[in-house]
Length: 264
Image 1: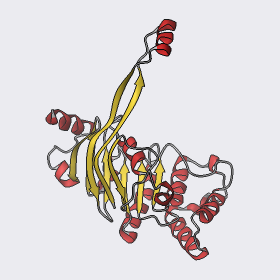
Image 2: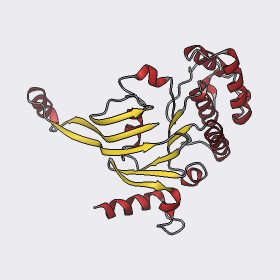
Image 3: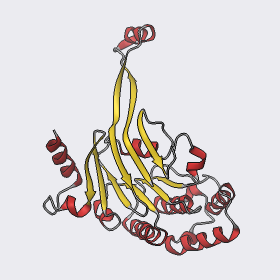
Image 4: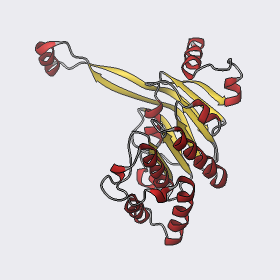
């Protein structure tokens, strides 16, 4: 479902001296330095896998997710999402994936949530039967009925994430990318969200790649972890193998630091 080979992403950052003279000098003789956000990572994810994609801020998680979803072009390397390059085939790829970014929403801000779903129904050319079936299922698990008539701007964070999850899965994509979907969400809402993800993974065999810092929640959802640090993969194996190496109570940050130091 997802194949990544020697994936790299580099950015050019302007190097400027302080003051007006530095700004003028940069206009005449601009200088740049290269920042490597992702440094040649490789992995593959099979159908029905639920994989936790972890790392500290700046490790390269979100950059990788953006490349996998076709939002961003890689500097080097190969990505195949169900056999296709996601950047070169962005329209076709969009119909095969669902995406939720915890800090952003795909809902229209000033109209009732139900109208956003109706618009998505037409965008994805869903049949009335498919749309009604999915809406009923999502509503029963996520409690959408409580806020379908409210505009997105009036939703709580937990309600907004639930609505975004339903919107991303309305067209039944075989792959779901989640980048910090529950950040700032209360415990009760998190439980509902993870219950929903477990169900679609079990029933639909939806392949899920999830970034989060909530280790306990991930344990109940994912069997495999990929840990990044400074753009490199430090660990790619089962959760049981990871926690078998450390004492109970060890934090994610401590694990990453130890793995990184061991790799150097």
